[in-house]
Amino acid sequence: MRQLGLLLLLCTCFSHCSAWGFCNDENSNCHAWAKDGHCEGENKDFMRKSCAHSCGHCHHLCRDVEDSCAAWAKDGHCESNPTYMLKYCATSCGVCKPRCYDQHGSEKCAEWARNGECSKNPSILATCPVACGVCTDLCLDKNEACAQWAHDGQCHNNTHFMLKECPRSCNVCDEAKHGTGVCENRQHRQCMIWGEHECTFNPAALLTECPKMCGACTTACVDKRPDCPGWAKAKDGKACEVDKNFLPAICPYSCGVCSTLEYFPHNKDEI
Image (cartoon, rainbow, N blue to C red; front, side, top):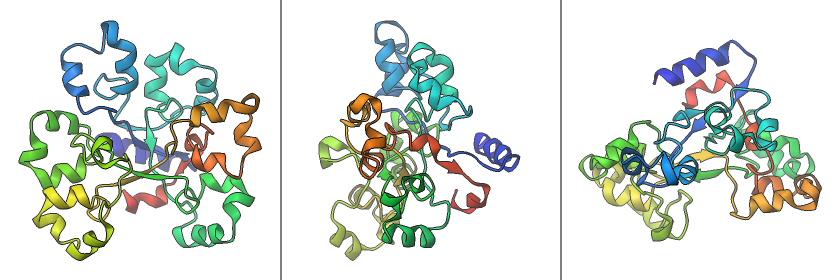
């Protein structure tokens, strides 16, 4: 993707930059609603929040591009100036779900996590988010055309590609069906029996029942509980500091952890 190439070029020019992620619609109907003109008019506020990608409010490949994004978001600019903020402060405004990497390597971060450093030293959450349990496996579209392809029926006509590359638009993690929006193997034991090779030969079943094994999941930084925004505002807005051993790992977006994740060029092989 041209956008990804540009981001990599920018990252090589600086010592570090904000972690990049994906801006996906929250509803599989967003593409159709956008085509019907609902991005404007009486549904504008709903569409801006739930269908940010289809309405063109955010780039599919996204990140914060300004150092002040977190502060601007805290001051309410995501609501007062959404045209700018949703595009250029996408992580801080919550429309971008940044991908998680352990900056110090999985083995070193895992060792620190075992030694309790995630709770003793909360700053490590931003550099070892996977090992510290900050991140969540999600169904996120990896291609900006996923919504269009899904609308055109490709989830059924090109199942293996679509369910792996466009799991959000193809409802692989349908919360109403599975009881959770987390991307995980529904039947862990059975998935192990079937094996990874079946992901190619029987994609309709395997990618739905075993999305993690089949490589459909993206590890990203998001709040784990719907109550997180309220919890973070408690105790005069200092709840994340007061409960630093618990709340930032459960509510990384609301506590500002997601916006502090960094992307380093040496992780190119993970893209």
